[in-house]
Length: 93
Image 1: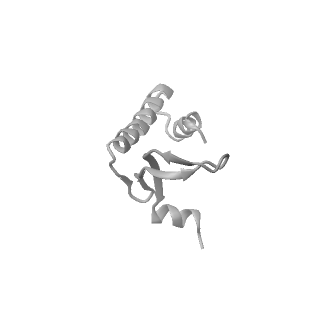
Image 2: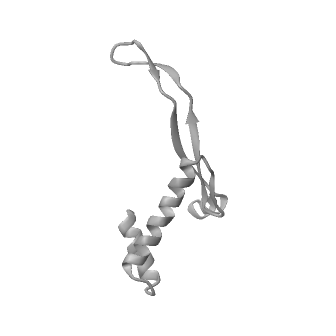
Image 3: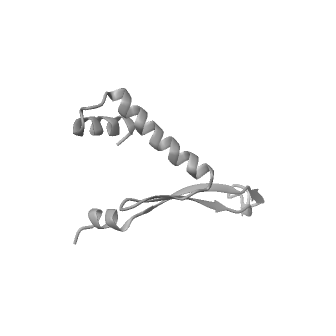
C-alpha cells in the first residue's frame, strides 16, 4: 500500500472530507514522524508500535572488492518496533 492507496482507503471509510484534506492530514502525520525522528525523539503509538532512531557509530569495515580497510561514517537508522496489540492481530492463535 502506498500513500495514495492509504488516502483512498481512508476516504472509503469516511466521505466527510475531500481527497485533498485527507492527503494533507496524511502528509502532516508523516512529516511529524519525520520531524520527531530528526530530533531523535521516540514516537509511540499505543497498540500499534514505536518509531525510533538507532545510531551506528563510525567504524572500520573491509571493502569486499579489494580487501582494504575503509572508514564507515556514523549513520542514523530509523527503526520500527511493533506493539503487542498489533503483533497479536497479525499472529492470531
